[in-house]
Amino acid sequence: MEDRCTVCDVAAEANPVSATHISHPYIDKAAIVGVGEYRVLDGPGHLACLGLGSCVGIAIYDLHAQIGGLAHAMLPHYEEGRDKVNAAKYADSSIMLMVDELVEMGATRSRLRAKIAGGAQMFSFISSDTLNIGKRNYKAAILTLKSEHIRLIGEDTGGTRGRTIFFSTADGSYHVKMGNYQFEI
Image (cartoon, rainbow, N blue to C red; front, side, top):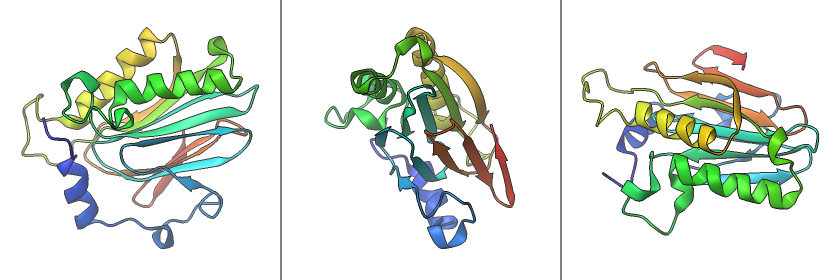
């Protein structure tokens, strides 16, 4: 298992995404969550993940408290990875870190909800489930959300196209941009 998501790296080189190419009302206000990072906001605000390929963008929030976070996870499982320093790069451990921090900030665990996008299979010639990092990232996130008793209320995953996402802690909106298409989940 590699510590870098080469699928995301290759996709980013082939189709670089920058704020100048994105049209969304949040873009000027959004804090960008980089690959292998997560961010939480205590109050209304906007977060974005640019250029999700096989990575997954996992939003967890308490709408009542207007507290939420977004992770840009590049690999599925912390225990399988070599990098034990940056737990945020893994889908399972980034969820657990975010949940702990959100609850510490005042979110009510029973009110936490999640939305997820990404997990694409960027290269059609890869048929092995072991090499399909996108699918494995998605499955790891879903299993961890279930084990943490967090309800998944929206998703847009899989396929063969990258995505950019925008999340608002103010209203829980989660916008997905794929090419010329933009929609909310």
